[in-house]
Length: 115
Image 1 (cartoon, helix red, strand yellow):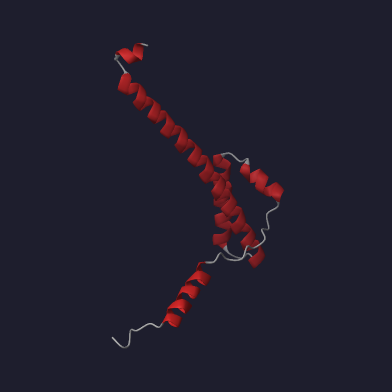
Image 2: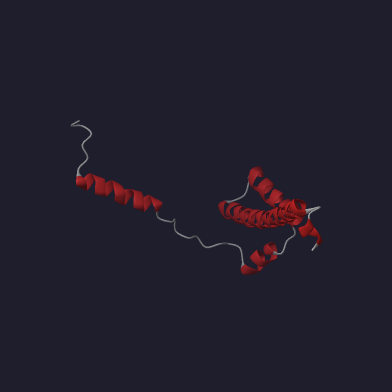
């Protein structure tokens, strides 16, 4: 197959292009202050969820300039992360409770349960 022959230099160039595209994007400074991030990190689930809904609605409504849109996006990302952390904590507690219940159920009514 003459048309599909790849030279070593083409193969090397292709590998380099893949490395460049896989490189992390430049980090953009956040518009959220550390104080704002700390406040979000302390929110209960319901409040984080409600504020996330408000941020999404503000973005969907449009009319924001680019800076305000980016700020709403960052707020939404931080709120989403907080809500997910709380859901993950609840999931871990439920999984632990189920494991304990299964363990107790396995030995229920046996001699080892009485010891």
